[in-house]
Image 1 (cartoon, one colour):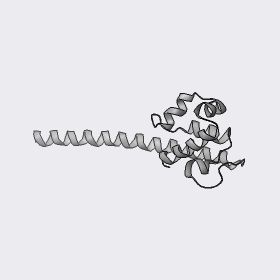
Image 2 (tube, rainbow, N blue to C red):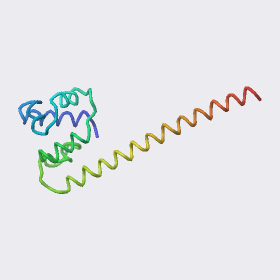
Image 3 (tube, rainbow, N blue to C red):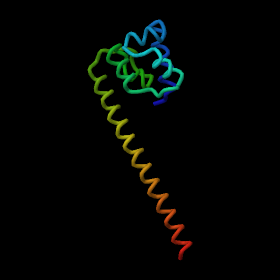
Image 4 (cartoon, helix red, strand yellow):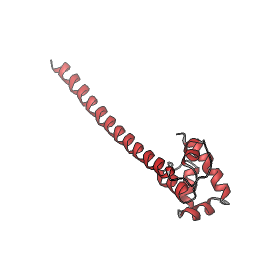
Length: 119
């Protein structure tokens, strides 16, 4: 998922709602939040994607991947968003584990260096 591609589609949605303020009002968020996302000062959140898909009926496939119909009313959209959230959580867990392993490896390397110097 490319953030730049999603931002491009978000800009299309902003235009359809007459600007950032109009979109913000339609989904119940602050206009500054929309601005920060568009200007890449804040990451695209699944909170925003979920609001665009559930409240405004944009297709998650279109919004995230750029494929398929722009707007739909199908229940599988909710399933896709849930699956994406679960996968994102799994990725976050894996990143945390990788960071822990990196720290452990560094500590082991440091200890090995100390052992070589002492021995």
